[in-house]
Image (cartoon, rainbow, N blue to C red; front, side, top):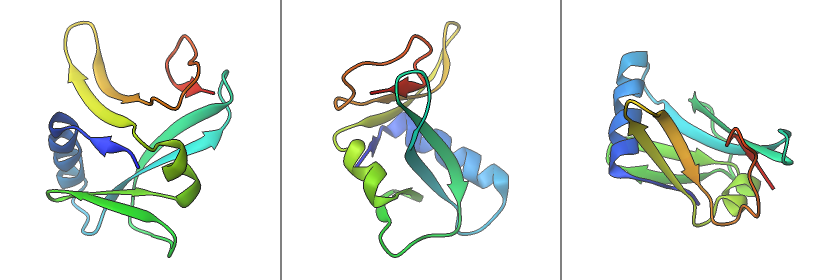
Length: 106
């Protein structure tokens, strides 16, 4: 399953706290679509399925459905904040190619 860096964990914790809702987790999923075949999806979720994979990073829970977890095995979610780039980025060694916008892969 995907791993969160310390920087991403801190940012996710801040965003969850700002939501003000108990029991939220970060759900990361892989969906069909995008210009390369698959795209990443990230959102806060409080509903979980029995086959979800759950990983905890301090106070942050990361949740993936079983199919997405397999496609994200060995991947890392990082957060960057700079003049040139701000946001979350997934480094996925399973991606054979990515699109120019960086939001889809195959």
